Length: 353
Image 1 (cartoon, helix red, strand yellow):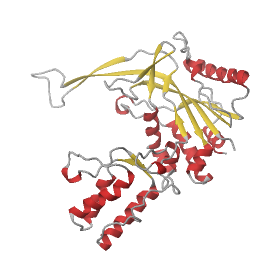
Image 2 (cartoon, one colour):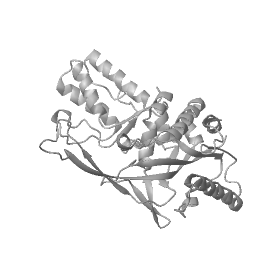
Image 3 (cartoon, one colour):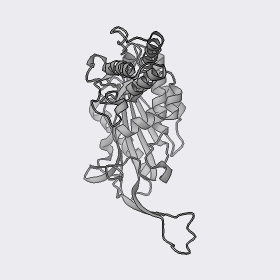
Image 4 (cartoon, one colour):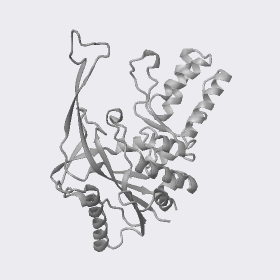
């Protein structure tokens, strides 16, 4: 079995604001001396992980990222006719197994129930929490130390196995991510434009005031993005306790989401959903490497076919690495939706075999 699966994607987005900075404008990065559009890896991973496609394919094998599990436990205990005092105390004991609790909260009822940092809780851990809550309600008693051992490593969720988990207070239950996702960057230089827009009051007939009811401005830009993903398949299987079938299922769902699912930023305003125009998958035990250097020199502003030029640059860089370093992968497969070559079905079969 090949240890590493590497995925190189080219995806073209029309005018959009996929991932905003602190000023609400599209995120950027300086590369090769020119400004590029950027979509953060965090934005990409969340879009893929929470997509209907990924959720449906791995239903029953997914966890949840949250800070407020203690709050939901508290409300469940109160609904079970336990006193508020005991409900809070026992909810704190359970939630505290997953991380340090906040000392302050704007809501006095839920104070000291929120976990300080987002924690990824697996499906089996959530089921264990629900089962314990049911026992405490039925038996009207507090949990013992053995029952509070709720963390699991032997029944890990697929998304935690892929994206990892960090518990500062319980490092023995940390999970190293088997999937690495680079920030997506445009293969060409860009200039962010401004969209000046107005909104009209439907009940204003214009007889007294013909002006707009709202005036706004938002940044946008169009771009062809290069995305790089590296998956350690051996680690993925290890994180899933040897369940190869589940690992392949997770890998297939993740790759399909990566080529189909767009970041959700400003989608209602721009409808910028897009599929990958080109995908190259590589497998092997060799040290992984990105092909972003292919776009250190941006695709020419004078090009009348950015997509084809980007594909040529990407494949040329792959071949040049192979000439210099020897084969950087044992096998590869690509599809090109611009020319109609290859298929997603065959790509998924390649990464899952």
